[in-house]
Amino acid sequence: MRTILVYAWRFWMVILGTVLTLIFFLPVYILSFRKEHYKYCYFFIRLWAIGMFYGMGFRYKKILKTTKKIDKNQPYVIISNHTSIMDVMLPCILFPNHPLCYVGKKEIEKIPIFGTVYKRVCVMVDRKSARSRADVYRRCAERMQDGQSVVIFPEGGVPDDTSVILDQFKDGAFILAAKHQFPIAVFTFRGLKEMFPFDNKKGYPGVVKVFFNDILTPDATQKELKEKAFEEIQLSLIEELK
Image 1 (cartoon, one colour):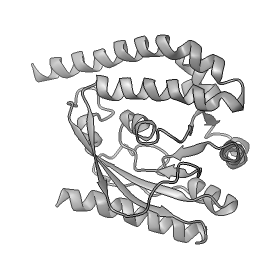
Image 2 (tube, rainbow, N blue to C red; image 1 turned 180 degrees about the vertical axis):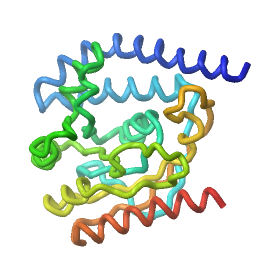
Image 3 (cartoon, rainbow, N blue to C red; image 1 turned 45 degrees about the vertical axis):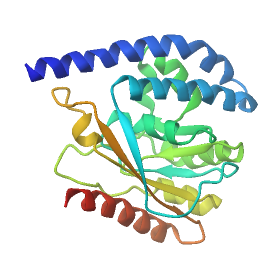
């Protein structure tokens, strides 16, 4: 019986996602053409994310691990751990004053309707192409110089081994921050691995713990930024498991 309910809940996500995408497709698509209009485009993207997250029965509790404050006039490289598709919604909810740009997989552009918008508002990367991977930094830097913040999940994907608490970080986010002198906002999302995993037979609505770990300044080296961010997120995840 529980499995049937989970499948029904997952099917509700398909319905909800389809309806919200159809509602917001036109304003997002039109407003995505000119970079000076992107902040208005982001307003509708954020509504879509809010609708998806809360519409699936999730809530979040923010836990501050630092006294540092987010500056609404400063673009950030925003990073977190990645265990669920719902991880994508949270940065939009957490950052109302920072138009966000995601670095995402090129394959997603094939999804009908959603993919059309996705390829206009995200920086896409073809992981099979070395040229595409290298060009990501330039395109992200251009977005940030236009006032957008960039969201990158530094694990580069979700590990198949569910026993892995935190996978090793890729270099991309830290190369971008160090090379172009952008601060890194570090977050940890705890709970979605159990509440909304990529296994369609599992999941349940609930409260996600969001740890705001730190803001790392780009005066450190790329390696130091990477090690510090990994340590902060890993510590938050391990502390929760005790």
